[in-house]
Length: 88
Image (cartoon, rainbow, N blue to C red; front, top):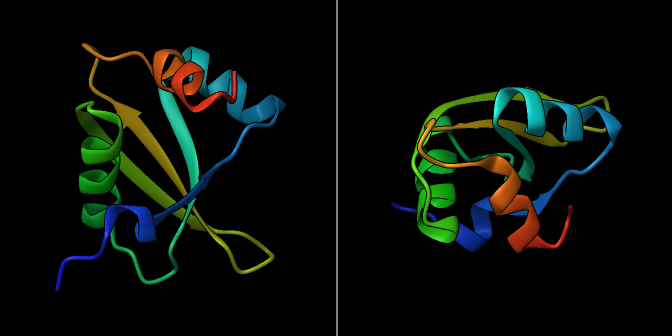
């Protein structure tokens, strides 16, 4: 069963560290639904933000949240998405 993209992506993370990752590695960082797979996250980001994703890596934080690092295809700029999201 496919999850709703809005149910997968909970909110973007913007800290000093994630803003560096954004600029240097073309990655966006989101807190995502705990049950979402990397594929779910990839599809949700592509659908919601109209970009192409080249890689997703996921970590669980010490608070038990699932954090996804989403690397965009070189044709797309993470900075542009961050500006659209109002986090940059």
